[in-house]
Image 1 (tube, helix red, strand yellow):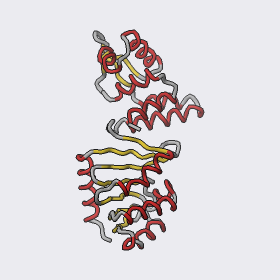
Image 2: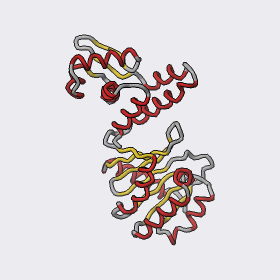
Image 3: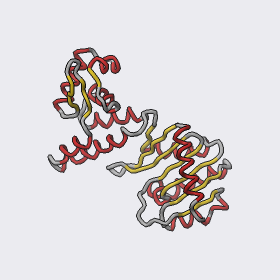
Image 4: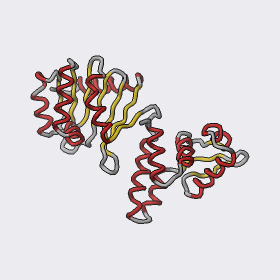
Length: 250
């Protein structure tokens, strides 16, 4: 699912109408603000419809009007919105957490895709069949165990080895999982370097070809994957990973 559509879905879950979610997403992407005419053309809503949506978003404190003739509208800070909601009671804390998540996701390019639930495991197990040559694995291997469990990871490694795809792994934790992983390197077409950390965040990234994959847990503890196809970002990540690799002892 594209990031834009995912954010819209989250906003609808929080009580915004589809129209409000669409308009708010457009405003999120433009820090300097937009006028009603632009939003009307961009979204396809009628003039009366776009003003109705803008007025509703303004009443809900999701946006603010910062200019006149033409009126310019900007998205309010999601952090500020979430803090205002959070102080109203525990029952609304989930909404505040979701808004914070949207605030983080808006920094991710809209070409990205997001996977969760069954689609995440299916996508993960299909990675070895999509790789042209080589996989970089970077982060906490304990996170992989936490996210997928040993059986799924065993199937992933088995498929990668069967397809003849080599891997380099930079592991930032000090778990038995990681030590056992490194001990199997020669049999599993992998070279592993461990940088011991006792409390490294449970995150993990993969890099292959022009694909950048980041696994993480959201505010509700649900595992998600953000995937971006970008030669520029892949090249930058590769430079970072190679620099860490070359400066780290086995």
